[in-house]
Image (tube, rainbow, N blue to C red):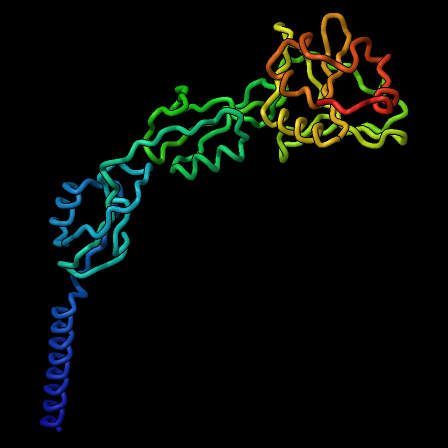
Amino acid sequence: MKRLLLHVFLGFIMLFSFVYLALHSISEITMHGESILVPDLRSFSISEVEDTLKTLKLRFSVVDSGAYNADYPRGSVIDHLPKYNLRVKQDRELYLTINPKNISLISLPNYTDRSRRQYISQLKAKGFRIGEFLYKNDEHANVVLGVRYQGEIVKINDKLEKASKLDIVLGNGRGKQIEMPNLISITKKHISSRLESYVTPGFPDCLIYHKDTGFFTVELKVVNSSNKVVLSPFQIAWNMRHATAGAHAYILVYLPPSGEVKLFHGCKTKDLGEKNVFQVPGLYEGRLEDLDFVKLLNSETPHM
């Protein structure tokens, strides 16, 4: 009996020794016991990567320069495989993506008379990033008035690095706050709708209907100190196109401090954008309450 117990005990010792040696050998082969946590190398320079991975007994190679990323320093790591916080074997090779050192300079595109939507598309196509939208008083809503980079004014055709983040200055549609006469005084027998369209730049301010005249549009303007009115290219194009095609399109200009108004046919829009309002022939000049649109439209002859 004692002999049997001795044999069992010796067998158990041998089995334990065999299992231990087997597991130890597997550990040596697979290095499960020596796995290394991959560090986050993003933003590291190549020299910093070398020092860090040498200490960890890991290797690396650069596989791609990638597209420029403004969130990382030039020449630094912007990504790597395997990813950080994964465990790898000793002597594992990491593959790095590096931010380009040399960045092409790009000219700022022309923003004159561009709408917000149009200019954003232009900037993105050039590789710029969009920052904040800054608004200032101007009668043209969402029309680009300027561009800033890091707080500084940028001029058209100035050279900037690709991926620069640009702030866009836009008009808020308010302009100089001069009270426009109320059209109700001349539209008691009309159906008048005040319109604001940011989708279609240049669309007139008012759409008016009368059973004897049908629909017609009115663009409302206020003369400035130089006796001129400010018209955007969108407004000029819209009114010229429709008026010359036979549509009833008009520009109504308020003349402070006299309080009178002057009415122009839409085909005169281009002249109004270039000349003094008193140099451009109008359809009516006088008090707003005396303006009879029905009589005017019924007696109107084509204007070119």
